[in-house]
Image (cartoon, rainbow, N blue to C red; front, side, top):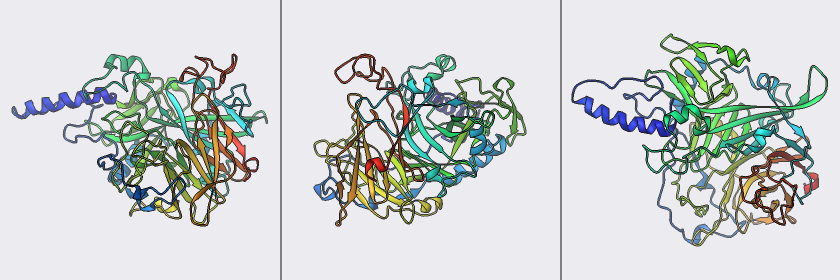
Length: 533
């Protein structure tokens, strides 16, 4: 399947051709990798939430930093494509083999984490309780930017997935390809079709989820930490009436940087992914599909048949294609693909101004990050906004909690319950939040110039969020938060890479002395007891 830019050009041309052919009674020729002319838009992903006119709202919606916000503004409704998405995923799973589950996927994890390496996004900040260093190319990738984090402590009350323990998941979005930021027209773009074929960086891959496990090597008896990437996907039906899939995107046009995946929550079989201006995307651990079942990329395995009965094969060596092309399956080179099974959309109109980090005070929030609180009854999914207040838009960002089990039904609206507040950060900038045992932890990134701040808050008797002690200095580029209950750890990860910002070793200043590198990505955890919790 072509990239969104080339695909948009094809659609424009196809529309013109179809109009011309209509006068002759002829039909446009079908191409297996393209959308079907008689089913336009089957490749288009979840429609965006309704948009209103962004304008500064009255002070009536804004109380103060830490004050109460309206839980009704957070109301989610089932995605309008959920039933069709279910049919497509079921069909795709009848063609592509199953991974055999999370445990089997982790048993074959192909990358190694090094604990306590020299990479140091903390600088002058105190060391965390534990630090995991990613494989070198993941640590410095220009393309993949780490964001959300969750784990088996969210997934199961006993913190075990079957017999598997010590599992973390983190999300990364494809934050770079040539031309993504400079494509003003639906028929234009900096990547030609030839460049798309030659350079996988030209392709918008969307989001990948990384499964991490600390374990004992069964062969050597030695401890090890291994991980594996899984590509998230969106199913569609192509012009030959074949089911296919694309990478995950927020919209095909106007161009966005895909789904930002600023927060993820694994709960039971489901993985919830934050979709900034829309709500939540939903994935299912029972639908992780395997394009290389013999674990030998060179063999191009035989795969199942779709409704046409034609035998297909797979190719995970080619990194520039995705979906079904000429009876061959591609996945940008990833062995595993996890297709979206459903969505939740904000019911209120999205009034946040575009091209700005400012947030309105009422109406649909941004779904910038999510986390899970298992210390309450019922278990609650937490959702909050990344905002930078500006004139007319005083909001520091809102945050609220949902009964997470209600999200499994997908038959009725779900309203935030328990609490909803404006964040107490005077300047905004929350990158991740976790609630645990009546305390709220908030990561505030300070860019590459200085360590981030980890704030702690509690609820006062009148329902306000109030500061609980001074900020704890933490990693530069600190992102989402996840509580590992049994080990009493608060996990996060850093997003910056060398050379990505002006102070990541490219330009030295007093905060970046010679010989230091504060911008290679790590996963890390603080002890809750060290944070006063």
